[in-house]
Length: 112
Image (cartoon, rainbow, N blue to C red; front, side, top):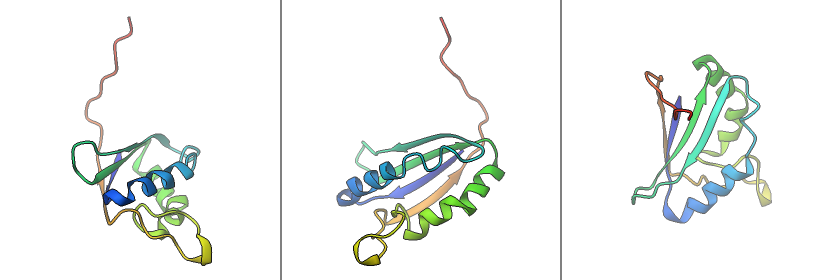
């Protein structure tokens, strides 16, 4: 499990969310990908969480060295590609850090 913690100023929240929406589907076909969630802060913090779950560390690293590397060339929370004038868009996030976890326990709802 990987959690990318993005520091996003209030005026950049909509930009960040639009950039993620425009990349919808970009990770779903990756080998070993299991889950994605973009979590918007609601408690007064400026930290967004990008949660992904992978079958293995190797699958995550393979994705990072391929499609993800191209997507992140614009910086933390940056867009992919270029905007008018051929310039990269300004990153929506001012900082990011990647947290890695292994699942030790999990639970699902009991079926009736």
